[in-house]
Image (cartoon, rainbow, N blue to C red):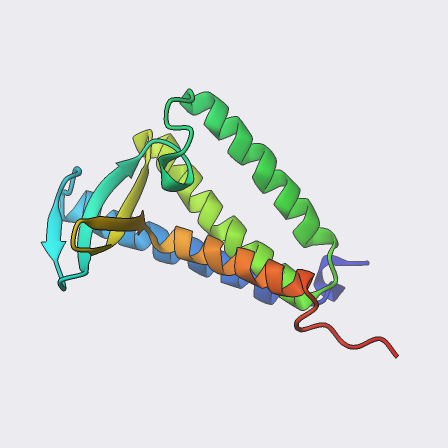
Length: 161
């Protein structure tokens, strides 16, 4: 089957590119144009700050003591597996979900290459409790995972007769 005849291939690819471009643009604006280096805090509300925090690990800072090369290899293997799944699936929901994940993962991986860590900006907190600090790529990855879970439980699938 030709690539153009695969259902939703091009539109899902455009979604992945949009995620990548949005995340890269926001990071470029703060790091390269505004000159942020880490530790900056702009208080937006009592529960939300716009900050720059460098995440040397993976989600929630896990594996932050692992060598960057190993994290890079893990990311490469994961992205390759997701790309193969994306190419092979005929399912619209899965294809878009995977491209949300791939666009975000690719941008975060580029952060590791450029800066040695992932730039995170959005910090939700309540009093002394700090929630997750994340970026646009993380939002896309989370949305993609949520869509994959919805597919797993059968939401969005046609009923079998």
